[in-house]
Image 1 (cartoon, rainbow, N blue to C red):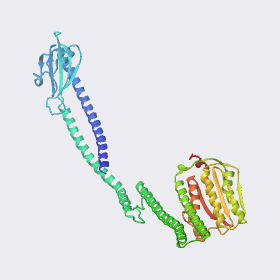
Image 2 (image 1 turned 90 degrees about the horizontal axis):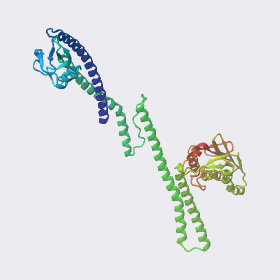
Image 3 (image 1 turned 90 degrees about the vertical axis):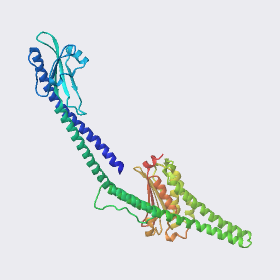
Image 4 (image 1 turned 135 degrees about the vertical axis):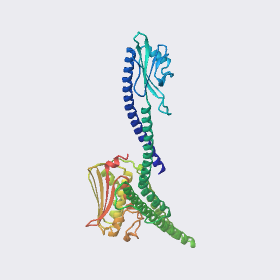
Length: 448
């Protein structure tokens, strides 16, 4: 606040100073023009009087001197009878025919004998050259300028004070909402849930829009914090389950001596839980890595080969269940990171095999810069309450709680789509469920 007021005061000082200097210069120029005109008239009359040998004189406030070529005073008015008005160099210049103009005395400090003079060489009737010096008092001119200077100083000072006060009040009124926002944001340290900044609802200016933006940011931060807490709780639960099973298996195995087949079964069970931990850890690491797009390595990729490499490993499982896995891919070349797209599509096919009963259909095409893959199945589809949160981490439909999986498959697919600048969504069809992965290929190409 103080810096802003000082900046306003400094700017106003420069403006007022410039304006005052301009006004002073214009008035001084006008007064000097009038004084020079009067001096020129008086000098002309004095020169004619010297040439004609008449008695010398002049108007009120005037003075004269007649000097010889050595600068000695031959005649002078009472005001300057003993004062040497010209310097030796001025006398030399005048003798050579130059017109000498000069001021005696300054504007400040006060001096009652300030003069402006004009000196010229003149020949007397006896043909003797002399120097005629005509002078006029500058008192009225200097007094007017001093009065103007005082008035400008007072007016500028008062204007500066008024401008500083107005600037302070304006800055205070403008920054008060910012201070309220700051105090509101500072209370975030108290972990206040549902905190929102006090934003006026009847205004629409820059600060009001800033307040709305900050409130939206607070909403996003609160949602992110809630997701983080939920993530930590779900991750702890998902990790605790296999670890508890591992501990139980080992406790049972160590409780009494076991036969070789029993130890083999125990080790197989332990291996299953260890693999589950490994899969969960890898999924979490993959999601974390996808949060930074610099990990993408996009390159031109044949779409048919990409889909085939993701779908073919699942054909044996589909054949064992006597289910048909069909693929319909239009020929195209897409600019994506196949290392991430392939496992994303594989996850979708794996989910369809585990959570549906009928055939599975995979379609893919690239059109007008967009690459789209759809994995549809024939089955019960997604529960309606599950669809809005299908792509959240550790989210699983109630019917699938007892089936293998960690609830990270669709979250991984969404992360892959987002890292490529695309989207993923799930829907129910008349036959079952469908998940659609859409990626703008042009956006992916720019990330290389």
